Amino acid sequence: MTRTRLGATALPLSFRAWVGGALVSQLGDAALYFALGWAASSHGGAVAGLVLSMVTLPRTLLLLVGGVVGDRVGARRIMLTGDSVMFVVALALALCAWLFGTPVALLVIAAAVIGANDAFYLPAAGSMPRLMVDAEQLPRAVALRQSGSQLVAMVGGPIGGVLVAFAGLPIAATADAVTFAVVLVVLYRIRPRFQPERSATRRNILHEAADGVRVALRTPGLRAVLCLMAGAAGFILPVSSLLIPLLSRSHGWPATDAGLIIGAQALGTIAVTLAVARKGTIPRPGIVAAAGMALVSASLLCLALSRIPVLAMTSALGCGSGVGLLVSHLTPVLVTAAPRSHLARVQSLFSLTQSSALLVTNNLIGNIAHAFSARTALVVCATVVFACAIAALFSPVLRHIGKRTVATEPLAAS
Image 1 (tube, rainbow, N blue to C red):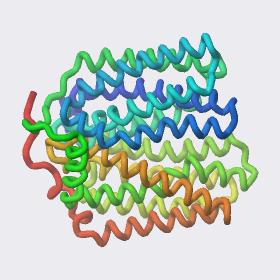
Image 2: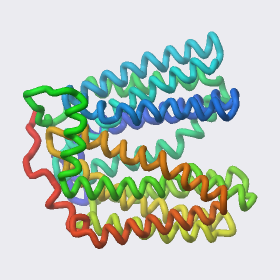
Image 3: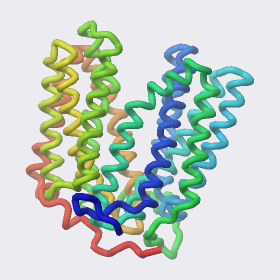
Image 4: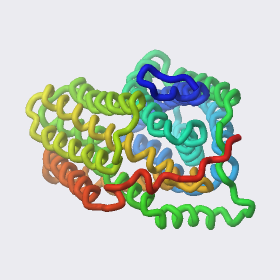
């Protein structure tokens, strides 16, 4: 093992190669999602909403099943299959869009296939860091992946806009197919260092999905982290997608300012997660996560009170930094707390709790903003996030989380 200048053991080359390939693929996905939404918007708002919902709905319905299949088959096999499927789908979408344009049926079918594939792919991808790095490297590995994902989220939309402006949906879908070819080559060449424990007996897939939920609920560390992350996701994620555009419109700020504010939030998250990827996490991750949520709460209040774009950008930067502290310290705990036989199922439950929370809070926060104002909705979000921070501080499990929830048995070396 090589060591960095700070003395920390360097992350394995195979893991860094996988992260690089995965981020290239995510960049292609982000561009394609933008292109799909743009093509759907030409048919009106109702169709655009339908197409985007057809990505979310099958993903939400199939996530627990995807977790079971991931634990049964193995993360690498699931990802190879999923990337192969999406390579074919992206090429087919590009060809059909070139020949027939963008009829509603084509967009709906493509969105549904993407959502269903995500339901199996996301739990497998979430379990990969634990299968590829040692336990002491896991926080830095997870942080590296998160910082890369945030960077992709920040630049993916603009890249999609350029591709669509250049040649429309066909070129965006073709570019996405190329990125899937890249990650397929990487996945084919690497092997996970460790293998999860698999049960010798097979039961009904729904029973195994329910078993994953029971295991998560009966593991104190997992239960606490899942609840906290669901609350955080429900009242933090709508800020960039919903409240910042509404706040900007209420102040008469142009779309470019709204984009810069959202970019500042992403920049804060990237900066913190990159620092964690380089230096590692701070001890007592539960307390650090609570501090991160307190910073998010204070930043949201400042954002609500901002009268000029530069103050809003500064507040968004603080919000993103708090989010970076939260996810970079709790996500590794979630990964390590999962039993070896339930890695993908716990990841699927993690994604499901966040998606379910968003289904409720997006509508709730949107209605509050409509009935009162975007500023009021931001104050509500800040209040709930601060309550989550206080709950984390008063929870013995979360205050002392880390050592007691980390799996003590090593994964079997492959």
